[in-house]
Length: 212
Image (cartoon, rainbow, N blue to C red):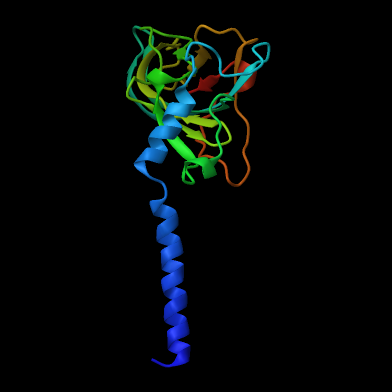
């Protein structure tokens, strides 16, 4: 092997070792240690803010997947929806270099604080999400939560001009158990590295209302 080929082989081998060494450093022990550290002294019933006088802002985007049923006699509309909720959890921050470079971790919602998202115009009372859902936490405290549900909402139908009528149903969601001075839902435009948004969005001016 000539000197040039030997140099290339050595460089490729070194680069491979660096890449695989970085990946393999994120061990099971790193993940369990991080999880234990984050949940130590964490109380899921307390808003995750160091200053409890502040308002916790939750950026909410609503995705409408379908309208499986419309009952114009009972005034009920059934919709399949999912929400994307993003907020800052000040209790869930860490230095990735202390845990093998781990920069994000999923944790079950049964173990941490999440906003309880409730339908404001319910036929049957329900909250979004289930105990099997996870919140993805990033090292800077960013929390991302994707709860979804099939919900029944009341809707006042005006059938006067049927079959040439046009119906508008306003479906609103709000943070259960909290006033707007504690938890506030809003929707804002993100930069080019933002999360996906649906064309159907919650309007903060109307306290999280989707017009269908």
